[in-house]
Every structure is written in C-alpha cells, then in structure tokens.
Image 1 (tube, rainbow, N blue to C red):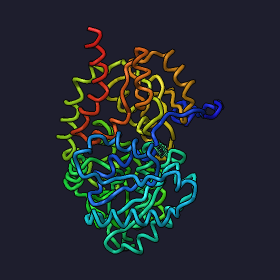
Image 2: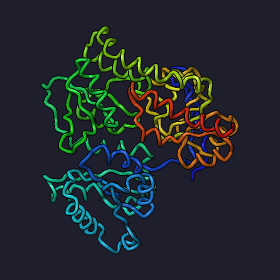
Image 3: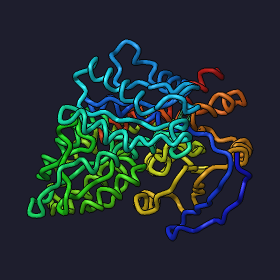
Image 4: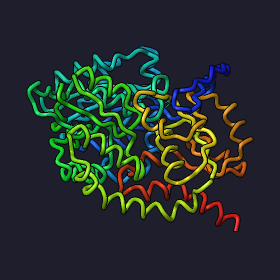
Length: 427
Ligand code: SF4
C-alpha cells in the first residue's frame, strides 16, 4: 500500500481535465487475460508458473471451463522451490515435457510469469528459449509476465501479444500495403470486420493474434495497423519497431466508434466516401436501431468509472455521445494519450479523467457523488452494492463481444441491465 500522493491536474489540450493519482490500487493481475486469450489462439497453451493463489485466480475466473479440456494450467511452485532447494529449471522442463506428451495438439506454449516466479527471479525468457530449442519445430515456447507486480488485468494481453510480435514473419519491403487488426476479438466480431473490409475493397486484412500458431500474420514497413483494444502499448511499440504504422482512430465501440474506426482504414486505402457510406450504411442502421431502446434507460444517468480495464475512455465516449449519459468521473489505470487522442477529443468538455488510483480517495468521491451506475472491478462491486450503489463489473466488457455494429446493442444492454435490475428490486 502506498501513501496517497496528489499529482497535478493537466489539461490535455482538448478540454478534458486529466488528473493523476497514486495510492492503493484494486485491480486483477495480468493472468486474467489467459481466460479470453486461450479461447482465441486455438492451439496455444498457457502454463502459469506460480502459486496456489494464481491457480485459484485462473480457475475461478475461468470457472465455466471445468467441462472442457482447458488450454491453461498452473505449475505450482511450493515452499521447496521458493527456498531454492530444487532446481526450478529442471522441474519446469519436467512439467513441460509431461504436458507436451499428454497434449500433442499444442503448437505454441506460453510460460506465464507470476509474482512468485518474479520474486525468486526465475528467468522464464531463458527457459522459453531452452525449451523452444528442444521442442521446435513442433512447438514454439514463448514467455511473458502476468504478475500483479508488473501488470494489471488487461496488460496480460498486451504482454502476450508483444511476445508474439518477434515471432511474426517479416513482410517484404516490396509487399503491397496490408491491414493488421491488433487485439483479441471474439471470432464472430472478427468475421464481421473481415467482411466489411472486403466489401470496402481493403485487402489483405489480417488479425493479431491469429487463431492458430502457424498463421501469425507478417509484419513490415507496409503494414498499417488498427488497434482493436486500447491497452496494447507494448504490442504497438513492438509492431512499430518492425516497421508497422498505426492508423489513428477511436476504438470500435458503438455505432459512431465503429464507423470512425472503419473510416480510418478506408481513408488510408483511398476508398471513395460514397462507397464507404454504401458499405457501412446497413450496419450503421442496425446499430442505431439496436441502441434506441437503451438510450431511454441510460439518458442523463450519472456514471462513475473506477480504473480497471483501460477500456474506460472509449466506453465513456460511447455512453456520453450515443447514450446521452453523464460522466461523473472516468478513472483509468493508464492513459496512453497517443492511442486515445481520438476518443478523448470526443469526450464532453471538462470530463474528469483520473489516471492511476488512490482507492480510498476514489471510494470517498464515489460515495459523495452517488452515481446512478458505477463501473468497477469485481472486488469493489459487492461493497458498493451493499452501500446501495448500482454497479457493473468491468471484466464483463472483456468477456462479452462488444465491438462492431452488431454488438452495439449488447454493449448498451450491459450498462442498462444493472439499472433495470435495481428498478425491479425497488419495485
Ligand atoms: Fe496473485 Fe500475483 Fe498470482 Fe496474480 S500473479 S494471482 S497477483 S500471486
């Protein structure tokens, strides 16, 4: 726990007030990302090198997976390991050998670091190289950290994708321009976007992560990429080191966000405005129609975001502009100003954005403001509900397909649902 240190308020230049705050935090660690990533890369396996706490976190976050053959596990380090009595590397090699023998379908193995593996300074990068040499070409082994010391919640996906970038084939400098969509999306959303890009005449279009380890897309100086998620700082940096260029856009949440996101690619490919309008009009119409019934429920509702997923700024933009909700405070654990410029510019003037967290101070502000809806992590939701506040778990926004035209209604419904439930309870 750190002492609260108030930091200055900055005006970001687009009229949004950004205040930084440091203190006690309440967020999940980056291991959580395994829950959606293991479904995305179908022949990957995530081996957490951690403690029983890590195993419990993953197991309860992915509780629904108990009937499936899971693609994640925890190599539990016990007291003997932590005391340095056993050679951890030998032990890890044995665990991996057993795993690959039992699961010959694995093509990509991630060794995922945790707080305990970091504390004892177990070098998982070297372990991954050693195991890769032994198991290639059938299995590639990579590593990244999901530890709570280094990462929050969605940063696990960033660390995982950043680890994949050096494995992507190099695209020839003479290759035609290609579009890369970066960030794990539900397959159904990915398919919808692929169809829209094809109708716009944008090709080739590829997605990171790919659904299979052997299909990771090439990257090079002619790669233009669109971020599908706002928490991919390290991945973006790694792609740019390989020559890729980011297309600036708001994130594809809601009818407006999706249209502007697609437009960024359309402009880069020189798609005629009339053709763009013709291709996007049916989806835009469906999205607007789907949003209508929820606008009446969310209009003028006062919404308070605790910092959790890094999706807060684009969500706040969607709620204020398309749902006419009021933003009391928009907390976000980190604010990548470059990646979020377009969303920030669409926030109402004087929106209070708070970067970082000082939990007690923010709880006090939330109690004082008495918002109609508080978007927060699981750990805060129960105490706030007990105090009479209505909450939305931010983790649901990662587990539910919310991007694109055909998910706009589902996105609005996620925020409307707790308000409807509260009204029913009161009746
Ligand atoms: Fe807890 Fe750290 Fe394991 Fe995450 S990585 S579950 S914060 S011990």
